[in-house]
Length: 279
Image 1 (cartoon, rainbow, N blue to C red):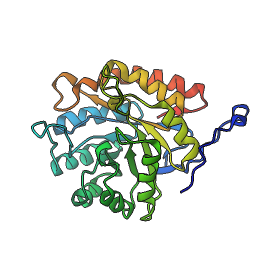
Image 2: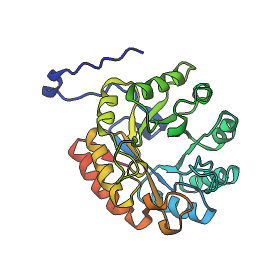
Image 3: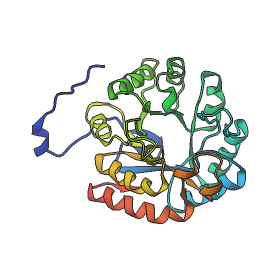
């Protein structure tokens, strides 16, 4: 797919209209529309009680999408790898109880049928952005796909990975900027707000941001989320946990459930300044 990368200064004098085709997740949940969609939940599903506690807070806050990992591609093989099918069953059960949609990661082609059975949105993680057999496989499944940018990938490589999914018939793609690896070591990654703004201008897909993985620090998640929305993000993928200090994965970047109201209020202010809202 040919994309125009030449800057057009005339756009500075006109209201920006994104070229993306909105992706409908449910009758009243659209990514790429007026609302900035909040997808919140734990990094990993650890237990029924933990996941239900998060789902209850997400639902009470008006959220519609519960995120959670059942299969976790951890850097160390000795770290918690997820609960697998049990985790998916827990996600689906608590999501149905509170009227939420589910987004969860697919690690490989062999897991796709299982994850697709339980999840409403299929997530392709950063490490799998160029796992072409997996991209082809999700391209043949009639589910929305959230494609995270590889942590060492260019914007062009990211968009071409999306094209691999489209080539197999699935155009319901949501791009996710989750931070890239740079020379900076103070944070886990560097949130590329340039990529959010550019992708919304040249790509036919909505763009969301993951401020949790982008920073790796809970105290920076809100600031990164506000910056992402200011840059034009159509949604946010944010980690919340009942007790981050005891989380089995990525506790340093998880927000406590008590932070949900303040987080929403702060991000909503930015969204409304741009004529949007947060839900």
